[in-house]
Image (cartoon, rainbow, N blue to C red):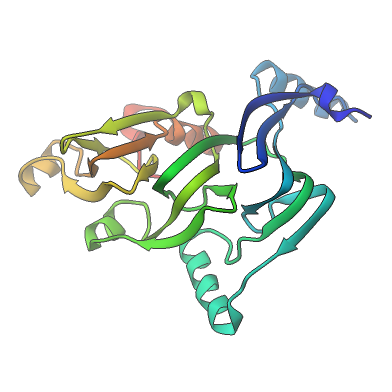
Length: 271
């Protein structure tokens, strides 16, 4: 069977002898019951498709989130660096704090790698000697040249009130990064901040920022009383030089999934 005949290439980019592709299955045709057929029909009507990341190596390497491999074809070796017992313990702690796996396996060689299929969405970013800080649990795969580090929030208010947690993932270098998201790329908004501009967000739907942008939590009004009266409370503030990526519709999908009412009284964008 030629799988490509039932797949659409949504996005493609290359770096250092590696081709990254985000694929979507055109249709699922394996209905085994009326109920399953109905679910597949409604999924097709709403544009819901199974997506998958395919990576083609040509004597090159990539890194993935642990457990992301679905299958591979070719002469490809997997290498995992644990750093011994001490290093493994540190990585396990970091993984627990960031919702990421403790180990990021590296695959080297020539051939094709298919990562786990999903109904989720993917954002492909290309770094050029840059650094981005991403929300916990979003990292999926990247070029082997990208360094992956755990970054602690710089102040207590950000860690306790920002909704982003104490630690996040920092990706540093030149290459391709793919994030796995709950919202499609068409609903991602990127803002360029310059000359000390500030972006304030009521909720934790900022998914990534470049390292030149600082993150803090600020009052929505000049005074604590004013912040309490205006109903906004605290806001997540991004300031500096660089890019911030927002997923404004993310809280709405969570409410659809859990069945929470969309009345104004229930829309508090904290997840």
